[in-house]
Image 1 (cartoon, rainbow, N blue to C red):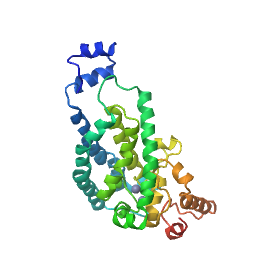
Image 2: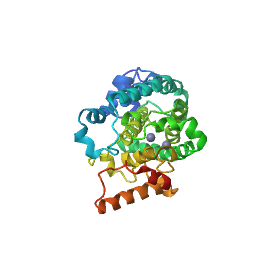
Image 3: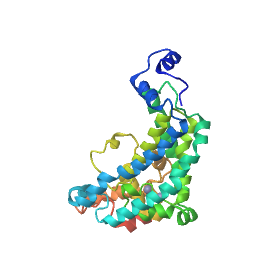
Image 4: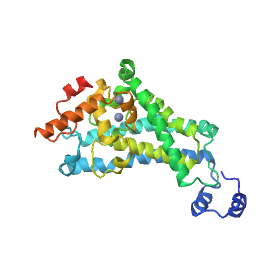
Length: 301
Ligand SMILES: [Zn+2]
Ligand SMILES: [Zn+2]
């Protein structure tokens, strides 16, 4: 809630006129408690989980021939019922774990200094903070994910996320409830280190989930804008991790590729890519990008 009764008082406190964005923020949030603004995250997550995977899922179900050249594992065709089952499971986790976690985590958000006040951050400030959040999350997620591939962590927790050996966008948040809680920590450490405005925090939550849905889409479209982001993993990169499955000791990072490169956990993936390139040179590649003679790759992973 903003401590100004009117826009004129807010502008007097700022010592200048409000920008159009600040005027909008004042108009719609001045009287709204901060806790309510924070809880909008629940609505944003629900919308993202529901709508972001939908276009690709509809294309896959309604026009499979049109998109199959871009499908990473074209031999795997999931039915409509399997898409629905995945989404229902995600909703169950959403209402039982993700939503309640948002409701009770507000004190931590307040404590680290995430705020709703004026002035609004500049685009540069928001971009810098978002970059920090992505880098911190990527690094911590890498190690937690790698630990979850230990025998106990995999069997008890992470196995659920790997039920989809050929992932779909809806399967990005498809995981054991404990994994959802554990992986909430890396998402919060960045904002705790470099706390910013609530708008930046909303954007972070939305962008991180959109990124996860894209990397689980199961498609490698040539026009994907994220291809221009340096060291970005993307759909093909993470698809390989699911393709290999529980034995996977490759491609643990959630966003970028540098951690796997630095710690040598992309060897299996690089071998896989080199093998496919060689097959293509020999004219023996049947068009499969990720599927095929998987066992031999898995052993080398
Ligand atoms: Zn995994
Ligand atoms: Zn995954």
